[in-house]
Length: 544
Image: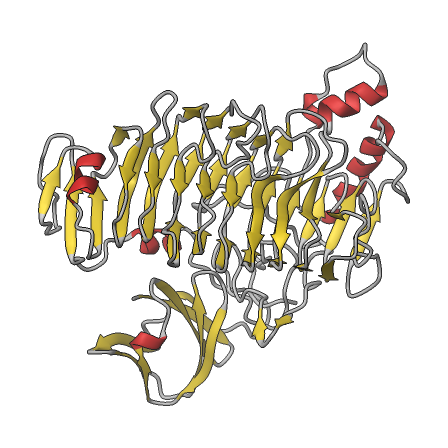
């Protein structure tokens, strides 16, 4: 029996959104011009645009938005800025008709704790945010603990290819999207290579971590990504970890399946690890009076998990659950790509749309259960009904649980997903399997569940020992100059595991009395310190 595991839950998000120490420049935005409580700033502005305009071009600037307020601004433009962070606290940026909310070519942009909603944009990619980056230099975009909800990009040109929430330019850049929700957004009319997030960057990283894509819709003629599309990228290392893709669909019928994730370009590597892909749109059945084939087209929409094109691209598909879609991994019948599939659990209508022959039932720990044995053209209602019966055996919830900032799909005690994943999958020398799930639950007993959710026993098993959220009774953690010091407050030796906010295990080490770590060598932001004391386990949060 798997031991009960500790989790930080929604508290992780609160820690990530907490105000850091004062930046080189700090501004506050309040429509009434009031000073913030408990925060020292250099100036107060009444609009986001005016605060951006005041930001210097050569030093970092943090802009704090009034907590709980809704700002209605469009085309907030900032260029040639070195480093801007915009932080909200239950703050909303409301769209203006036919305008983006943000457009920037700054070298580094960080967005935290903001809800973006109400965009109705026609003229280009990137309905909420268009991040161009800086030509000739590596740029960085970080979106953390945000919500993109009820936004629409209709698109009036066949050259517009997606990104209702976020679109990037084609410069060199690193992009991280984490702890963020994309809900009820629509990209329509033309194109659609990346419905909610369109990435066109080169020579860098794309990381989508601990996010949920919920009921988003894409218009696509032949292929693309309903949630995320890598369009004409080159030499990008992508990671999609601990995400939930729930009932995302397309609004017309493509010639084949459309993935939630689309990998297109040259020499890109995508690690798709511990994600949950779920689809069940039978409630859209138009009723009697139409043929089975027409009903299928109106209801089913033919989605897949991942679509990978040739061009020297590599897909590592590990520990994912795919249930309810037409297929799991699809790829054109070419040889110019590499697909590695391990420990996935797929319940779909058919094995795969084209030639993803690496995803085979009974090989490399994969389970592939299909409503029909072959790819024989469009599925019928009978296939969908058979699929529905198979889905019941997965032991996964059909509705999102919302007790976490990022909603998730839980699994039950009898689910075949439990302990069926691999705890280690190496890409180079790095283990790409996350040490924690979408809620921050640490996988600390050597067993890994398939999907974004790690099952936790409601009742601790024998020998579980002390269970507590905080580890401050066992360790004392503080900073001292350029060091992070961890002191043992018990009479026993402890075992420490340091985990990043993305669930990746950073280091494991014993602790006898005192441990001093180089702060510069640690990732900035939230870290989870897992402390093992005998048979007990607890967590201490560290924010750097």
